[in-house]
Structures are given as structure tokens and as C-alpha cells.
Image (cartoon, rainbow, N blue to C red; front, top):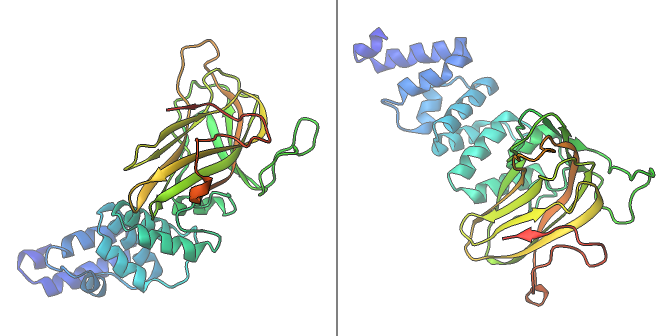
Length: 311
């Protein structure tokens, strides 16, 4: 750009803003150039970025991709509020804030978007939000070929056409459909979320399996970033009705990060191609009173054991 080579930054800024206004896809390049001499995020937005929703959204994506939390905060203050939880700009903002360790901000926005959210709980763990909002709440659901993931709005029924006597309290669930054509190595869906305070906790939820055809069955892997928790909750068999599971654990540092993911390993067994369905429902973390703690339990004693746990 001739004006920049001549040292005329004022004229360069005019050209950059005009270029961004004409094509918002140019916004990131304009920001990259202007940040050579503009340090303040607010000044950058005032002088380079047109104040439209589309341009602010493009600038938030630039801030996420370049890991500029201060710029993202400045953009967030200019966006019209409140936002819908499925807005891409919200997902970009929270992904950046989470990666930068600003977990208080993430939990605050989650609470604004979803009144049912409770600090330290599994975000969207009852699967009551629209599918397009799941990434905003920390879920990563990109799946490999051979499996599809969807939200079920009603609980599946038994083969006799009725709900089982034991069933999750909510009707919504996350369903994985395996097509039987792939020997999958699966690491999704996965969700990461903060647990802000130390203490004794329990992760609990419900699951159900239908005609899973392989000996290498899906499982849940659960871990803490800073703690010693590394648990594997194995599905009990290939076909089982709704069953609860739970894991008691201790959080030893503030702002701990829990990871919960669905895992399936590849196998050389003859039945390596996995078919069938797996449901998850009503995932939550609850804080335990000191009198509630004890040996780790993996199932409600009122129903048959749901799983084995391997450390």
C-alpha cells in the first residue's frame, strides 16, 4: 500500500476502513496491517472497523484466531445485547476466553444465556438447548465418518414400546448413531468446563445402549486438568436400558477444568465395525456434603450395576 510505504498512516487507515466496509472478508487483513501502529483495541475498532454487526462478528473471529482477548472484550462491549446462545460471535468469544483462562467470564456468560446453568455444572448437560448452541457451551461434536450425533427430544422407549421404570428426569438426550461400516477411533463428543471451587463432588448421569455390535464398546473418559482423576466408565454391554452412573471425586485447586468425552478404540477383532446407538442424558456435577463422601460408587444400588471403572 503506497500510503503506508510513504509513512502516511492516516491515509492508510482511511483506505483500510473503506476496504473493510466494501468487503467484510477484508477485515482481518485490515486489522493485521493496522495493528502495526495502533495498540489500543478501542482505537483499532474506532479507526478501522465499520460498526456493523457483520464487521464486528468478523473482527471477533479475527480476535479468536489471533488469541487477542482484549480485542474480543472490546468487541463484546459494542455488540448488541442480549445475544442468542447459537450466535457464532458468542461461541468465538467464549472459546477465546476459555482458552485464555478467563473462566469466570465464561461462566458468567453461560449463566446469562441459559438460566438453568449453575456454576461448576456440566454446561448444557441436560441437552435442553438447540443443537446450534452446543459449541457455545463448550461441546465439540464434530464426528468422523461412520457415526452421527443428534439431540433427541423424547426419551427412547423399550422394545415393548414403554419407558423403563428407571429413566432420566429430563426427556432430552444426546444420541450417537453408528452405521456399522467403520472401525472407529472416537474421541467426540467432548465437553470441557470449569469447576471454580475446591471440594468433594459427584459427576452423575444416565445412559442407554441399543444393539451395539462390537466388543470394543464406547466408554466415557473423565479427567481433571490439575488433579489425579483419570477414570474410564465402560458401557456394561451392547444392549442395556436406561441406567445411571456416577463418580465421586475431589477438586484440589480453584478453577479446575473437567473433561468428559465419549471414546471408542479401534480393534482388530472380527466384529470391529460398530453399529447401534448410545444415548446420554442428564449429565451434572453436584457438590457433596462431607457426610456424603465415601467409597467411589458407579451406580444407583436400586438398579443393576451400570458399568465397570478402570483407573
